[in-house]
Length: 223
View 1 (tube, one colour):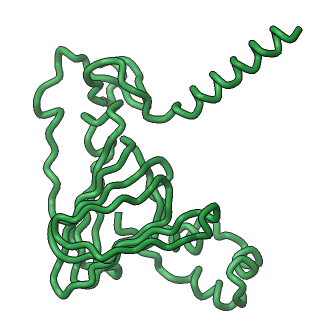
View 2: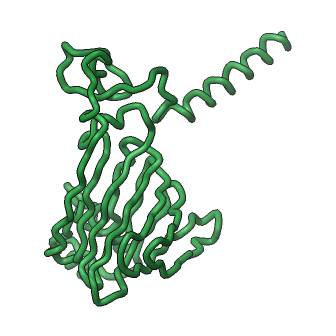
């Protein structure tokens, strides 16, 4: 009886371990260029794989254009996730270019499936993230200049603000081929259908009129 209980516990631990690493698994082949045509390959990690004999150098190439920052936030995130760049499929990484107008903001957001490494290519950015309640919601911030690198830990709320009078550019590297983006203000006040005002009024300790005002705003998506 004790032996069977021990085996069951080991099995549960093994299952928990496998579930914990169920996203972006280690590749079992050199590459798996994603395709949408089901006739061309097998389904792996959310995408069908292109026949390796048909893969070419262009499948591993992507050019990122400068983003248009003429919007209320003064920033544009150009995502290079697996949907935009199928060559990333099964490799567990992605990236994004972020362009900032003078004093432009990439607003507080999270990547629910990734850690982010930010590299400043041009300009000066104030960046920061907020830790969980495990660390008393501690706010970490730093002013970065060209060539500086900063890490936003897995799924932490973070932002970047251009504090200079000239445009800035940064490169974001992420530890998932499909990291996802949840912009806090958009999600809380712009959800469809809207979150009940009673909930938000109590959560933020403000009147329902303020919540109503915020829910009527046009929350811009810079992604």
